[in-house]
Image (cartoon, rainbow, N blue to C red):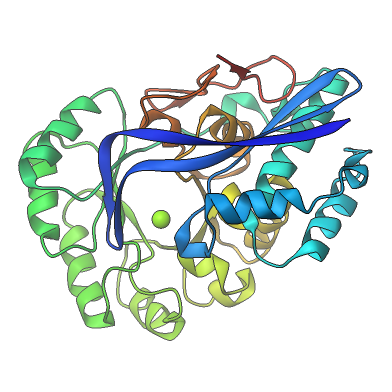
Length: 336
Ligand code: MG
């Protein structure tokens, strides 16, 4: 039995800009877990917003005593062990959680979606994300994404209206908007959402900073578009969020993996909230794990592997927005 891991730098097809940052490469950490002749894969895509780096992921993984992973079926106990090692480190924990799931499913010879009793025909379509850019580049990106039925547009910039007008100069397809905490006051958020509600927008993600839950509650009382909590899901409980938002955006990397995501879906359903499943910039390992889970949610945004040029795995689980759930055991992906 062994646990190996290595850093891998993902190259973005276009520099990826959101309200708080811009990047052209993204380091991830790929893990390989081997036991009983079965090799399983996992992935961490650390994000500075949640206090992680590739170094912190590797540091966390180096502290794991692999004998604690000797029975991968003990997902709860393994999760408790990882939480005992250190708080936070959600993407590092996610990598281990994905690898345990891949191993269990390969051992049982079932695809991952079957492990969660999911109906593969109910996988929602995935949106394709367009980062913040100048209008001419927005037009080019939207044209490149012409096969995708739904686009997710990053806003929270100084030229939000220009961006939407550029999108609307080439397509009328439905849009989802993500402000990534970029509107700093409730009045700014209200004005933006009022205008967006005339632009065939389905919902708005994280309009204001995660801590401004009272402002989010005020905002929700004044707008018709659903408001979805993303960054806020790392610092408030689902019960708290249900008083101020219409839904939550779960990400395996942000929320610590599949087992924790399953619990969040249950909590959200109990409080009547919608559930979106998002991603970071990730390889097909992380995207496959989320794709197999996606029949359990309402909306999917699982395009991280379509934004990069050097995915080191085959078995692409996202074909122009259609999430293709492999019937091969486990994640259904293979290293190139
Ligand atoms: Mg978001």
